[in-house]
Image (cartoon, rainbow, N blue to C red; front, side, top):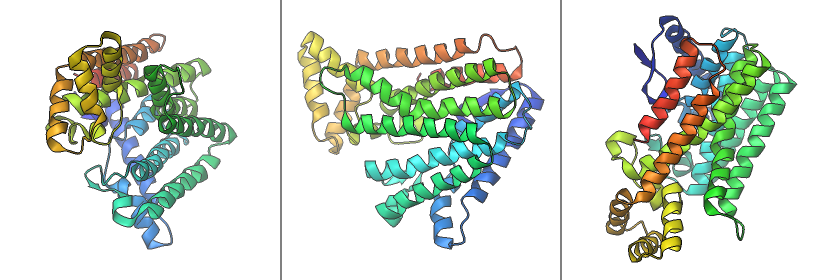
Length: 336
């Protein structure tokens, strides 16, 4: 048994492991090729996050989904490059919006070169992704365009916040479905589609990807509060510090409103204050870790992972299906 890709996914089949490793290597080469420009500065900026590494979760899903058809079909690796380029482009834009200073352990592009360069580099990556897509056919272009629209809509909904009378938790889950679920759904769809899998299998892997994407993001929400930096690779409470109301925080607010408990109201007041203050931030983290809202968010994460797993039931048994089930287990494991 060996480990490939993100989350320490275990692959128990040597042929699948070799295929996946070769595919990920080809994707890495494709990413470097796609981010080259005749202008050296553009190459440097565009390759900044490629070279910083990352989980390559989306390309891995493309490669595993392709196992249900011809995994060596010519469109498989380019479509994996497209989804990762799109994801990377959104990171450049996210960092500008969040005023982030660090991404994947290196200075963010906006911290290094300013907001204008970061935004334009993100646009450059979108352009390169579109260029590759054009060779994959009009259907691929349409699918990517729809996913990108959902992704941007999710981002706008997050910025705008829930409209009056809308349940903040429902709103938040809609945001995640757009921002994260849409592109991970496309990863499953592209892999199966490019490999020539049956339409029913393409549909299954699209729905699986959507739910897995939700579980993946919700596990991040839980990790942001529950883990130490050694476990997660990033500073605990980053979302808190940036004022992002993730699912555990929304559940705390919901409970405070429902019960009127003094402790919950105090915690809500702390959450509404300045969490760039280290002492206040540490106190909020301590309280959240002991609060039932965290366990409730963890259960929702597990539910989405279980839904993703159940989607796979009609697929033929074999190493690829086992690996996709393993991704569900790995996401649950991350959420504790």
